[in-house]
Amino acid sequence: MPKAPKITYVTLFADESVHPKYEAALKRFAKSELGQHHKMHIGFGEVSSEAGEFEHRSPIDTTVVVSYFPIGQREHAKRAIEEAKRAFPGWSATPWRERVKILKRAAELIDERKFDIAAAITYEVGKNRLEALAEAWEGMDAIRLYAKVMEENKGYMKETEGVAGEHGKIIAKPLGVWPVISPFNFPFMLANGMATGALLTGNTVVLKPTSEAPLTGLMLYKVYRDAGVPAGAVNFVTGPGQNFSSEFTENRDVAGITFTGSRAVGMGLYHEFLTRQPYVKPVLMELGSKNPAIITAKADLKKAVEGVVRAAYGYSGQKCSANSRVYVQKEVKAEFLEMLKERLASLEVQDPREKGAFMGPVINPAAMETFAKAVDEAKRDGGKVVFGGSAVTKGAFRNGYYVQPTVVTGLPIDHDLFKRELFVPLLVVAEFKTLDEALAEANDTDYGLTAGIFSEDKKEVAKFMDTIQFGVVYANRSGGATTGAWPGPQSFVGWKASGSTGKGIGGPSYLLTFLREQSQTIVSG
Image 1 (cartoon, rainbow, N blue to C red):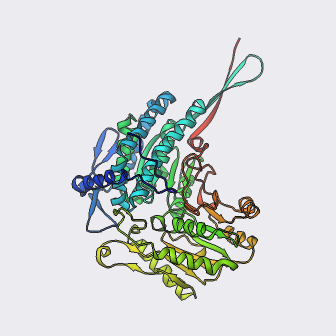
Image 2 (image 1 turned 135 degrees about the horizontal axis):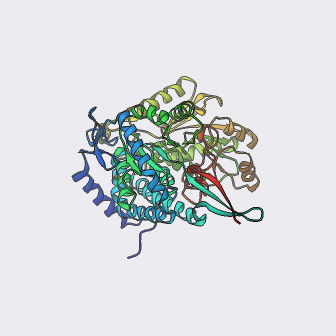
Image 3 (image 1 turned 60 degrees about the horizontal axis):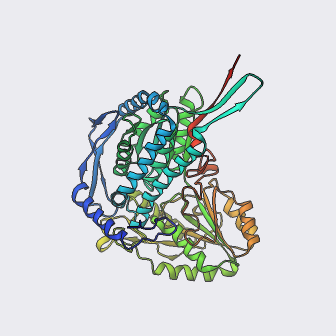
C-alpha cells in the first residue's frame, strides 16, 4: 500500500486514511497514557526527585491531567552532565557512518510512531492534528537531511596539500556535552532538531524540555535510545528551568548550550554562560520575533488573505514565525480588511482534536492574560478591534484556554504592539503609501526571523528581497505569509535578536555549529 502524502505546515492536507489512524492514536493515548507518572533518565538510571512531581494539564481542557514528571533539581543537572561527559569519549569515537545509521533508524522510529507522537502533541500543547502530524514529519525530514549533509561532507574530514613532504587533514570534531533546552510550541521537532544536530556530530546531550511539554520530550528520548544512542550520550531531565540554568551555565564540563525560546530567557542564558565559563563557548539560540507581511496594491489579495490567516492564526499565533503585523498599501487596505474579516468569520475556534480544527487553544493562563492586556492596550491607545478581541469561555471551551482570532487597526505606527512579541493570535494592521516606507517600518525592529510580501510585481518582490532584514523570507506564499519553513527547502535562521549563529535549523550549515575544526599536519621522511 502506498504511503500517505507527507503533511507539511504549508499543505496541511491529509489523505483520508490518515484520520482513522490519528483518531485511534487519540483513543490509545486517552486510555493508557493520560495521567501517568514518569521518571527522568540519567545515564542508565530512571530517576525521581525528592522535591516531588509536577503535573501538566491539557490546555484543551484543564480537567485533564496529561502527565506527572519529577521536579528536577540542580543536582540532577549535575548528574546528567557527568553522565554525558562519561559517555562522550565512546560516542564521539563511534565512526560517523555508524552515528548516521543510528540517527536514520531514529527517523524510521518516528515514522512508525508518528500518530502516537501527534496525539501526545495535541493533548500536551493543544496543536491540531495536521499541525501535530506535520511536526512529526518534520522531525523525520530533519534527521534525514542532517544525515545526508554528514554523508556529503564525509564526516567533515578533508585532506589538504602543503609543502613537499607534508600531509594534512582538516577535521571537524565534536565539543562535548550540550544541554538542549526546548520550547512548548514545537515540542518534538525543535527538541529533535537541536538534539539530532548535537548527537549526529558526536556530542552528548542533556535534554531539558519545557514543563509545558515534558511527555513529548520523553517520547523523543525513547526514540533515540531505541534507535541505538547509548545511555548517557542522551539524558532526560524535567522541571522548572530555573532549577537547571545555574548548573548549565556554571559547570565547566558543559561545552555549549542550545536553546529555543523567548528572547528574555535566551539572553539571560547567553550572558550567564559567557561570564561564568573560563573561556568563550558556543550558545546556539533561536529566539522570538515580530514578523511583518507587506501587501502592496499589486498583490493578489486572495493569496494575501489566506497567507496572513495561515501565518497569524495557525497554532493560535504561537509560533516564533507567526505573522503579527501587516503593512498594507493605502489603495487596497479597505478591500483587504473586508476580505480578511470575511475569511476569519468562517474560521471557528475548535477543540484541536476535531477533524476540521484549525485554531485551538493558547498554551496557558499567562497567554490568556497577554491576549487580554494587549486588546485592552489597543483600545486604550486609539486602536480599533475590527475582528475578535475576546476570550472564548462558554460550553465545551469553559475549561480550556481559548481566544478569538483578533485584528486591530488604527494604532500609531510606532505603537508598542507593532514592536513587542505577544505569542497570541492578535494581528495589528497599518497602511503605507510607498514600498520604501513599508520596508522601513518592517525593518524597524530588533528582531529578524521571518517576513513576507504579496505583490505580483517582480520589481517590488526583488526590492523586498534585497532590503528586508530577516533570515527567512517569502513572496506570495498563500500557505503562510511568514510561516512554514521546512528542513532542506528553507533554513530557519534568525537575524539580530532572533538568533545567535546566522546558520539555520534545517540548513546546510547547521551541523557546523556543533563542531570545531582541527588542522592536522604530518611530515613524512
